Length: 403
Image (tube, rainbow, N blue to C red; front, side):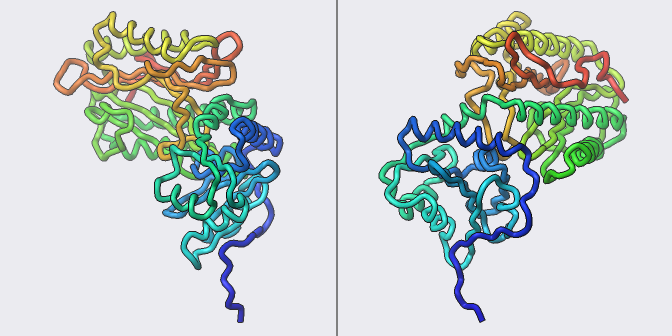
């Protein structure tokens, strides 16, 4: 009877699965990461976040309290997964993989040290690595130096390849499918949750049709009504829709770790004059904002221009958040390319190949005329001379007073 219990081991179980991108896409990403290594004079990089692990390896992990990572050296890349996932990390990653076991605490870090070596200059993601895990990295790898690479990696991810843009374009199309399904389900007397499920189911079926070899997870809908529209991330409830309600449609298909979104303001059957005026003003800001997204313009400049647009209409005090953000490997619980957000404090200059949303939102407090949250959201690819809007679902009162 075998009694030895390995701390880690290769578990190449089954054949490699189809990944979201071709091998040359992952090689290009790794080449970019190795340029960061070279610039910072690093021997190795230890990636620990869901978004970086997925971006460079193709494997999107489910942590459930266990650490995962990718170790990159000058000539090697190894994904390190937990035994609970068996051969899945190896099947779903580009390159090699090691499985660590639960027989002994911190076997993850023993596996990392096995690949990375000891006494090396190590790149880490300081915006993800906790203090406790950083202490363990230091104990097991005894690095000569630790260097943050999170910001440089983020800047690399901000520039999309043709293959990424193609996937994001498909995500935007699927988001539209969910939007139309939601529109068809809206009627007075129906609960938010029932309408949300109609949109989610339509998107999941469309993703499975378009991507038969993918993993399917985490596609979701936030469909809000009445007071529940005041925040962009308010969860779905069992509230029953009433005639005249303001609605917020938010569809979020997830394809291989890539999030896309469609967000629209709607009303049930009719819209009162005060609400219509605010809605039209937000639509006008949305259209104005999209016209500003072009190469050579900074995120801060776009933000200040839309701020002035709202201020002229005495609406700036109702603005809820920044006016847009980058798209790529992200979801509501991992990833953020914070260097490409339409905010006053972001000076990033737009370049061809970036993908960014335009999503102005106004929240009018309860009890005031036109109370509720108004938001439109389109996804735009920055081109050589402007932008391409890849969102197709219509916005505004002409199409979105429904039921």
